[in-house]
View 1 (cartoon, helix red, strand yellow):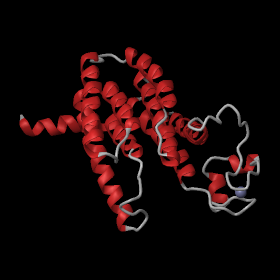
View 2 (cartoon, rainbow, N blue to C red; view 1 turned 45 degrees about the vertical axis):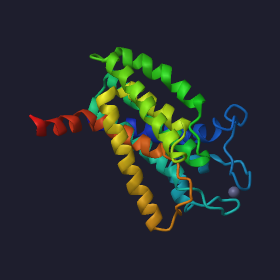
View 3 (cartoon, helix red, strand yellow; view 1 turned 90 degrees about the horizontal axis):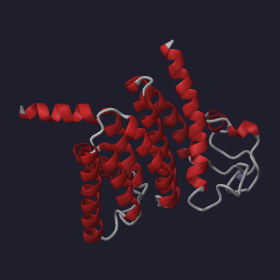
Length: 251
Ligand SMILES: [Zn+2]
């Protein structure tokens, strides 16, 4: 029975992931409510239902538009697949609890913001403001929530990021600051420190690989949001265990 529920989570994940691509691409430029159908961004041709099956369509078309042959970014099927996998992981770790609902919403927000930040180098306030109240309400129902730790986490995130933004000029922006603050609030201060640490490690590693592979130069502006998202997912699923393991060295 459990594997069956897992499969359902996966299918919902890839279907919603497909929708999150659209949200992430259309909310930042204000076209979310204006455009109804999906179309190719190069030749403007409306896509048929066969071209809208998550993951499968991309594979069947070998990553190219059927009309103009233009390559479709691998980001889209990757977001679909990742959402599916992360929904299953949420279920495997939290079962069927209020924590699962919280986890699914966090995953959804991270996927949408990742698309937006990669496409426009922007983490829109609109997106954060949609998710903040939903996550706040869900958090109220999670037993043992430490609100003081949450406030300290958000405050520390604000101070730390303000210092980084004004001290380094570039690299990180106000969107990153708000994104970090939200996670500081959601996870509390000890996990916020872990999240911040992990995001810089992921950033250094991936940017290093991109540089070495010649995909970017030192001047390319690489969005930081995806690294914050990856760190937040690590903290969401494994944060308490990682902290536990870390403190065990001091006991
Ligand atoms: Zn096309």
